[in-house]
Image 1 (cartoon, rainbow, N blue to C red):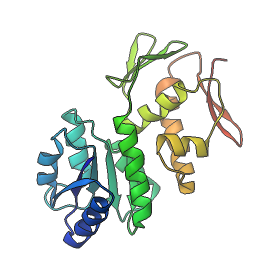
Image 2: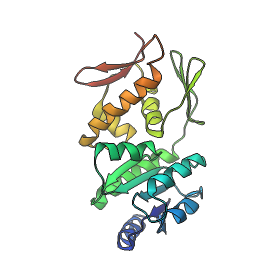
Image 3: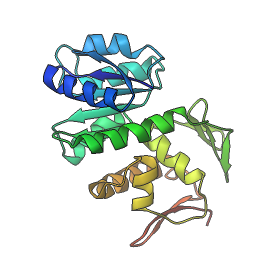
Image 4: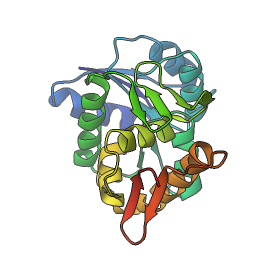
Amino acid sequence: MKILVVEDEKKVASFIKRGLEEEGFTVEVAYDGEEGLKMGQDDSFNLILMDLMLPGKDGLEVVRDLREKDVRTPVLCLTAKDKVDDIVSGLDSGSDDYLTKPFAFAELLARVRALVRRGTSERGAELTFADLRLDPVSHKVWRGESEIDLTTKEYALLEYMMRNPNQTLTRSMIAEHVWDYTFDSFTNIIDVYVNYLRKKIDRDFDKKLIHTVRGVGYVLKED
């Protein structure tokens, strides 16, 4: 498995590189945003660890540029910012997970392994529920004849719900499967993203598909 670390603090980059190599990963390092963008377009990487505070081009901009170039390599953002708005901004840029500094290496390793597993898993055939369709290959979603534009995390949340229709999904289940990690403080983020998704999937349609199970979580079902 090959990982790209984009981190301008050389001591931090060296610490991450050494730790991951001891776990059997092959690691390359970029020390600024421009270099990270150039190296990140190499599809041989299984994962990108992206610091957000980078010289030249910041990490969020790099992630957005990679996604616009249709680079689908999973991205784990590393940053000292831990407010909900900062986390949402990171995920909306197209990143797959978010880890605040300082962090324990064991936590970083757990997230790395989870994202690598997800990135190498088979994506499978098109999913359908009621008049909702999701194509795991193209990452496109339709409600009836209307294509719906989703962010990376909104898409991941909907895919999880469509793979588990008519089942109540707790916030802990969603955190574990969509964010690949059980992280209690993510519950607020989950509510934020369900609301985002509900506005796009249900707001303009008579039949509502995403329902709240009070005090428990959410369920994808027909009325």
